Amino acid sequence: MIDLHCHILYGMDDGPRDFDTSLRLCYLAMENGIEKIVATSHLTSLVDIDHYVAARDERIAELRAELERRELNLQIYPGAEVFAGEDLMYPLPLEKVTINGSRYILVEFDFYNLRFSTVLRYIEEILKRGLVPIIAHPERYSFLQIQYDRVNFLMDMGVLFQVNAGSLASRSGREEFDLAYEMVLKQAANFIATDAHSLHNRPNDLLRMMRDFPPNINQNWLERMVRTSPQAVIDNEVVIPSMESGLLIRGRY
Ligand SMILES: [Fe+2]
Image 1 (cartoon, rainbow, N blue to C red):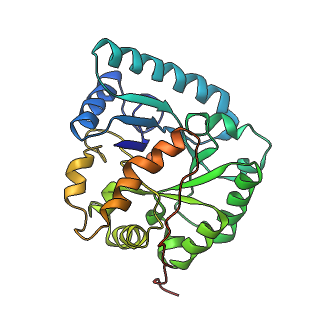
Image 2: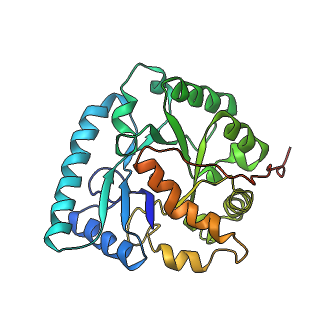
């Protein structure tokens, strides 16, 4: 499987603190059927893009060298979890922090006090640059939890969605689970990833989490979310949307 969203690199953000923990997360990934990881450390200020990319690439090179030395079958690709704030509106080179140099960019938002109109403004800006936004863990945002049909609206704009495996395995709150589950059932979720930060805080034990997924998930779509679609992103190919996607209509008004 492919983990499209993982804080595997040390010393970049609130992920692993040292190289040893990065390596242990790599072993946990392999034990859980993960063969490819996109390193998506937080990028909180877009003004720091060059510094971020230099630090990230250095750590990826270090990790790849060690994985190779140990003859381990795990590929690491460059990415970023880009915080969408007002600096997104500046003409900064966002293409430097896309996933593996593709047109796909993983974005997150402020969890508090963010108006949906502001989210739309950021999404429009990303699309205007010719990039495809992948919203990380949509199920965690109250602006979507309170009104599910906003997911439909974003889908129509061309947004893709990455749901956290932990949300679907009921490791987060009830509201996270409800929206994640609805998005997977309606095939609005394009990817499932771990968003792992450490061995203890949201680990990447994907197979174990999958055993706790609700049993009636469409297996073909699950395969698409953990393998086919993330591979298309890494290869900068088209992510095929669901042909059966239903509209999400639940939510509080
Ligand atoms: Fe993350």
